[in-house]
Length: 210
Image (tube, rainbow, N blue to C red; front, side, top):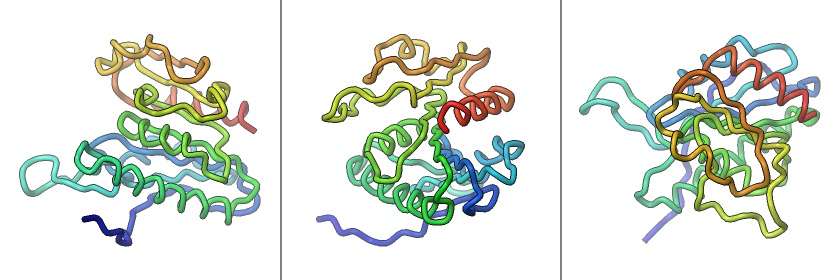
């Protein structure tokens, strides 16, 4: 038996939404991280024309034992389909909020590690409010995700950013992705977000996506 219930979700943010906002980034943390911690990577990118939202995964757990530091997760294999639908609705409500208060802004989506799979599924869900660009950081497109009925995805809007020493991607980055030819953005490093690389990615994609 399954029932739907309302949840209260935590969303950290930088900047203020208005009609003058030019770009909005929705950024999704990785497994075991929190929205507040993940948002610190973006602190130098805040300005009067850009807002950054970091929603937090709905599932929380202690990282060690039964007390101490808490992390968040977007999903596990348990009740997987329901968790996917829950976070698609969650992100859809956030995107609706952005579109209401910043109607002139281009919206970009970035996911790191586990958050990249979440971002890809939301991008694929074809929400009525458009997303100008998708960044999968330290991850590839989920292999189980079906292609849209209309054909292959617009690869001009999809970027794969990855460290060349990332142990989680060594066997996957060269595999064909389920869309044409995404932009590949390698950098020297591992399974991490590097501030200078992040700044270059954000500024380049904003320029190309507007």
